[in-house]
Image 1: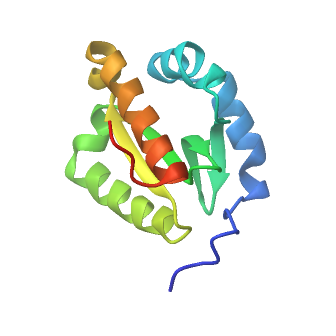
Image 2: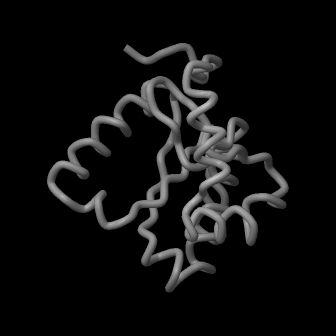
Image 3: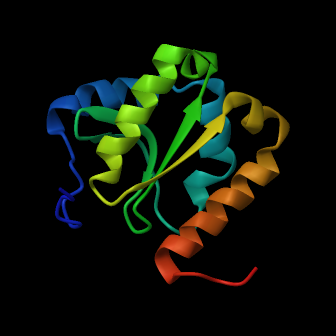
Length: 129
């Protein structure tokens, strides 16, 4: 059953954990935040609690979650966990974009362009590029 689209699933019980994660972002998270998302024209949040998870980046206007995945996400257990997590987030009408740390290191411009395109698509509908 799809949840009410206005409810973000914000979990205040994870607030302190999220604050700690913001203070201790990975190198890849820092790069994406400081070199793109922080000054992006549509507001993004870092380490946002949603349901029982803390997502790396969240844009409420576009209903978009961005996750940066290290090598642990590509194990069988990691992929299963991420699949369940994505299903839960999608119940809030959120779209989850995943990028590997490798992508951030080796195709940063492409990552940023994909995020920009998805934000515009989610806010303004289908657009021609």
